Length: 204
Image (cartoon, rainbow, N blue to C red; front, side, top):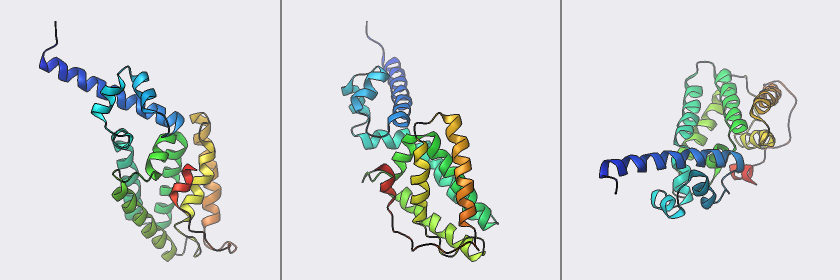
């Protein structure tokens, strides 16, 4: 006895939801290098079924992290409209680092260079961060020699918390970011010249 069309659609929806949930879990645990076969196995579907739904890993990553991409974009947008430029800058750094500390997969997805993925989102976010930096500088609260590329340094430092239990990672990330934000305040001693670091280095 075969299932009717409506039941098949329900099964397909359940399989899809299960695959996405498992993908998020495995990407968070192991990063984007996790094989598609491992995702299919844990989700209880065949590899062929997985590829029918998601022809490439890029397609699966984009779908798995759509909500997180939207959250990240919203963080930057909210920071840009904050009437206090320094508070907006600090809040953005805190929230992005918290996302990184609690979800390794999202960080990898965000900085990945998949050509058909979210390049427009990443480019728009990077432009927003540059504008956020300039606003904070213009307010006199962010040190003049801070470079947007320093965001990569922040993420590299914070990435050491990957794999640490979540409750520890959250507390440690908050403390690290507090240290860094104090160093970013205007009026502190001068720094060596900024280095043009790509976000892709966070994956190295």
